[in-house]
Length: 67
Image (cartoon, rainbow, N blue to C red; front, side):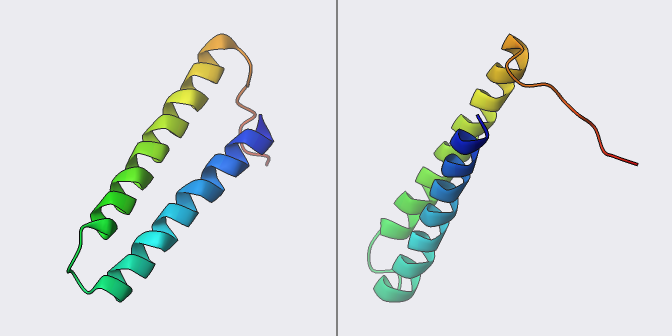
């Protein structure tokens, strides 16, 4: 599960990077920046729902902060 979450987080960061690239390259002439940011939001919501579902099914447990 940790690998899945790490890969999903890397995809979210890659989408954010591509949005920055399109923002600098297109200079507002296309909507590729908006599409990349929308994809990032969709991936983030999906990751959140998957982690929430894994918690509800008992596949992951909270560990708390160490003292």
